[in-house]
Image (tube, rainbow, N blue to C red; front, top):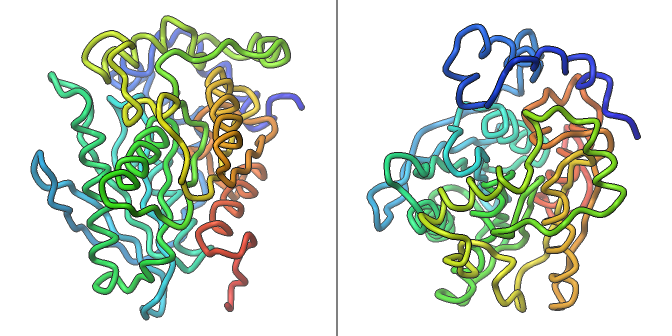
Length: 325
């Protein structure tokens, strides 16, 4: 389908912005980026209780934010969530982190733990963000009673680079701890150091997307090398899960944006999961571009539907929990 009208109408706001890094640093361009993402004036996300916490890790404590549904209790489902940002941007307050956590917390009645992993800036490289992700998931698992969480109902997920980190963490815990979560939830993520060539249909769609929102081979090379601290050949299966043995993974849900160069990576990874005998479901979110979880669910129906899918997996029913449930 065409690019969603809520996005297409805002594309002119991106004219003249060369990169997200430069745009976020310039007040005028930052205002246009916020307007493009419909952040300004967007409906407020659900109001849920939050508190800071931290998970011990090999590089120091890993800050997390815990989102708790109304009513307290025990035996609740849980989602450990990692935001995106090309491994070098993003924080707990970006919509993809905060809004997503609030929505899943409310819709699934779940505890959500959002992870503030170390970014690849100032000389930080793999495995530091990976180690932070592993530490956070392990802390949630080992603190399940204190968090009021059923240890058998912990899901792990992330968006974009966060999806890569979530997958790598689950692979590490499978291998080191002989443990996997109930599910792995990935949104518009990338699992390859070098993204496979797009299909003819995807390549045609991407001609409609502004350069700023593309992930061309040179962009992906820069991201991979910055994360790995060197060439793509350095990537093991924890850094780039497409290189891993995938047998024994938990069920996986992949949400792909229709207009996203990185979709080719998730599609190839889906096929590899299926060949490994992993229970995998891939869903194409129509009309959406990479990063769609930064858009307000109340205004953009495909985002609302995607969050329902995530909440259903976290809840363990495959459907949205009724408000009074």
